[in-house]
Image (tube, rainbow, N blue to C red):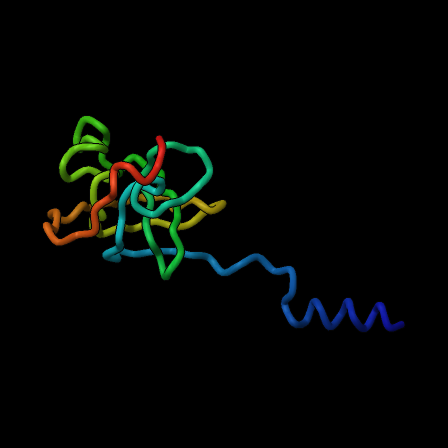
Length: 120
């Protein structure tokens, strides 16, 4: 009987439910390399990431700039300095799937990566 009461109470309180969906709709976010700028670990090398409400998410999607469009380690690249971008997308399985991405002009006062404080 006690087990049944605990199980019903747990279900009513919402324990075990999936976390709320994280979506962004044309929000200006801090973006950059997850490894170089946001110090994420996991061995993925260099990749676009964004900070959404205090959490850093790796980003994927056709809307992201390619290495040809913006070299990662160039003067204004994702591995060199934190940038701002207007982003639309939704987090799925811990990855921000981007449907729209507009990189804003670089800010000379933006935080920059120390090229010697991490490995690629």
